Image (cartoon, rainbow, N blue to C red; front, top):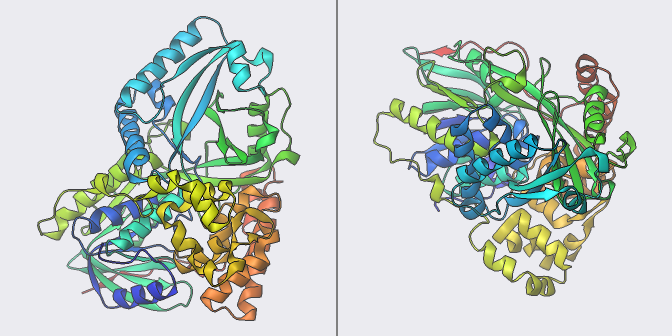
Length: 576
């Protein structure tokens, strides 16, 4: 590797110096999973590459998904066999080679509600699903009687099913996977910088040849030249195209999906569940000591940075999941709620659940490639197609994509350490469960995370109010993972914001103090960070009491934002 995977304060400063007045072959705009994938693809083809993100890595769609790496069973019903086959191939690749420390098997039970044809119909679909998966790290599906299904999931009402079918997919912490992808790109030499907003583009002869950047932490500005720009901003793709004075070749429609998080003991089951609704499907997904229940699928026409869940959304999920549970869930059972936006390609259908999950590439205006649509699972394919399109504008020989052979940082050595977890726990004087937890978050980087504890034993203390995490992880978030704010750590580097009933509020003082010691915050900055996070949580709670999206969005925007992103109309393009 040519660079360092560290995204700490010094790396951030060095990155700004390289960008200001510098030049790269490829400038990637957007730090979600696709943008990070594009950066890794480009840099491992030998292209000088920079990735900039206006907010935090994975702060948009890529931290708010259902956390599944899957083929998409419902796309079989839509006869989209190519998309399912492609996604299942990618599922196998990330599980077995690219990110085995982050992507894990997950079991689902499909409850059958009718005798006869339903078992044959669903069974045929799952047989095809297994077949399309090809080489497999997962077991094949299995048919169950009513007794067998209820033995696996005692929480189900007896009259809610006549039998079931169990099958397997995979899951990951989406925010951590995206951030690790960006760190891997940095390790191969890419410039990776968050809180760095594109506020304008530079043209020569009608072609985009660079971008004007603004550091949203300091207000500093810089200009970087680029052989080509890749717009990988998801639901913001149309906004970036307008900033480039282009109508683009496709339109992106934002679909809001919300999820609720409930403690594991609220649903007695050894497996996840997949349920049909009148619109789509509903998942009950195992998530450590919790269940994630989701999702919805509705148009969102408000602030893209702050999608909000309303009372109606939450009631919709509770109503449908309670149709099959012997002991219904209530709002009091909910530990966390999160809302995200899917970037769907606009089409002829009015219902967002019917819009395309396939991706599209645009090469307008000249010098810019835009990529949108697709599924989280197929990020690598989207990235490859985007780089292939951009290479045509570079006028230089570029090798083909090699990312199917590039393990993410932490993957190499993970399996050996996982086998040594018992002795590792003894050496570190930590419980075995905690070592397993750390290995599945950091892989072979676990020793790097815990190394400072040799000098500071208090780093091995649990985070106050969130005992599943160590203070060493909070520090590592700032020193190596690019976290700049309390929100970055509580919402994305960890998932404390959705895994605790206090939504992370009880952790803010300890977390802010740790981040401030690394990032050099003043007392005023520290107090501001705490106040901002608490206000954000309160705004989210208020939004979840509103009866519609309009009021929920208005409530959500009450919260102050620690990042000072640009507002107002885009700047005029520079002409040269």
